[in-house]
Image (cartoon, rainbow, N blue to C red; front, side, top):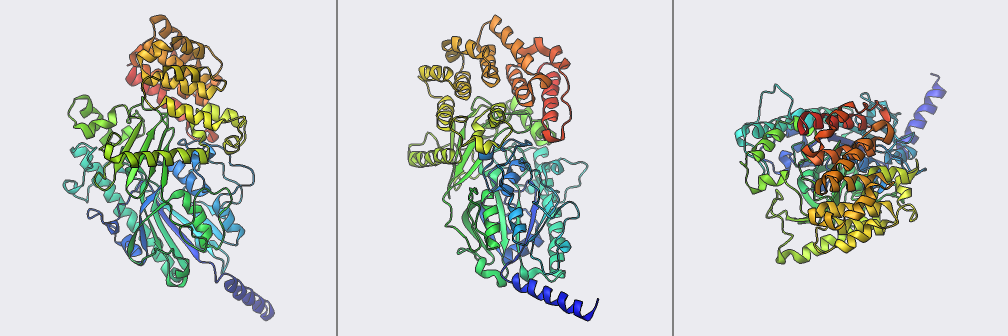
Length: 618
C-alpha cells in the first residue's frame, strides 16, 4: 500500500469511528427455554457465575414476558416488533407473510450502518425479508464487520432447550433432593431428575455465555458494547413451556450498559439492581432501534424501554397461545404488576392435550399416569382437566398460579379491569388468531394476514371477537344467541357459534341440532368439523356415522390441505373410541409430503395419525 493510500485508509477509519461515536455496539446472548432462573435473580439452586457477573454490571428485568410460551412465535415477536396474533404468525412452526415494505428490525439497524450477525437459530413464523442479516449461520460473529463499524450480534445457546432436559444418560450435578417442585407438578424421582438436569444445563449454558463475554473483553470491546441476555420463554418443563401463564412467559432480561453509554440507560436503571418494570419481547425491536438512536417503525406494537426514544413504562403485558405443533387451542393472557388474567377461548380442551414432543420429557407421562391412577392433589390434577373460561392469579401469594380467583368477590375489580384490558388489546391488534388457521390463510389470499385483518370486508373483527367471547364464556341461557351466531353471514362467526354449542354439551347440542346439521353439510370446513364433532359426541348413531364420514374425508391432507386435515384429525381424536370404525381409513390416509415451507405441518399430520392409531384406537 502506498503512503498516500495508507493515509487515505487511516483517515477513512478515523472518520468512521468518529461518525460511530454516538452508536453503541449491541451484543445479545440468548438461550432457550429458560425462565428467571439465574442465581442473580434470587434462585439459590442455580449456579450461574458468569451471568451473575454480567448482572452485577447491569440490571435485571424481573417482570419480563416473552409474549409467547414457545420458541417460534416468541422469536417471531422479537424479530418483528409485532404481536403474532396480529400478523397471523402465532401458531407453532407456521409460516406466513409480512406486509410489503416491512423489515425485521436488524434490517433497519443495517440501514443505519450496523453489521448484524446471528449465530445461529432464527425459527421465525414470518418469511424473512432479504437484507435482514449480514450473516446468519454458525459462523456469524461481530469479528466479520468492517473496521470501526458498529455491530449488533446475536449468539443463541441451545443447551437449556426442552430436548436437553430429557437427554439420557446424564449424571446429575445438582442434587435433585434440593430442587424446588412447583405446586402443579407431582413430587416423583422423574420430576426431580428433570428439574435438576434443567439446572445442570443452565450451568453449562452459563459457561458458554462466559466464553462469549470473554471474547468481547479480549477484543477490547466491552466498554463500547451494551450486552443483553435472556431466555426465549419459560422453562421447557410441562405447564411452563407452551402455557401463557407467568410460569411460561416470565424470563429474566439482563441489560448491561457500560459507563460510556449511560445516557442510553432507562430512568429506572440501577447497576447491580433488579427492576420490577414490565417489559416484553414485543418491546425489544423498538428498544434496539432506540439504542441506535432510531425511532420505532410505525407498525411496531411494542415500546422502547431503553435508549434515546424510551417510552413510559407499560402497565400491562400480553401473552398468547395458538396451535402447539399438532394440537389446536386458543388462549390469551394479560398481567399487571401483580395479577395474571387468562382467557381460555377453547375451555372444552384440557390443558394437557397430547403433544408427541412434550411426552418425550419423563415428567409428562409420569404425571399423566398418576392422574389416571387418581394419585394427584387438586393443584396437580388441573393440568389434565378442562379449563374454565377465565382465570385470575395473584403472583404475590400464589406464584405457581394454582388458585383461581375468578369467583372471589374481593378480586372482582381486578378481574374486570384486566378483562377490559384484554378486550381492548384484542381490538387494537385485530387478533386474526381467532380465525381457524385455514380461514386465516384463505382470507389472506396469499398475502399478509396482517393486512387482511385490517380489511373489514375480509375480517369483521368486532363481530368475530364478540362471537368468540360469547361462545367460550360457558354462560348458561345463551342458546338463542348461539343459534343466531350459527346463522350469521360470516363463516367464522358461524364457526364460533358451533364451538359454543360443542362447549356447552349435550343439552345445547340437542337444542341446536338443526343448526349443527346445516353447518356440517355446509361449505365452510372449519365450521363443518366443529359441527361434526358436536353431533358425533351428542347426536344419534346415524349422526355419528355421517359425522365420521365427513371427518375422515376432510382428513385427507392432499385434497384438503394441512390446516383442514389437522383440525379434522383433532376432532376425530376428541371422539375417542367412537371413531373406532375409522381406524383402517386413518391408516390409509396418504402421507403428507415433506415441504420445507410447511414448517412442521407434515410432521404434525403424521403425529396425529400415529397417536390415533397407537393410543386412541389401539
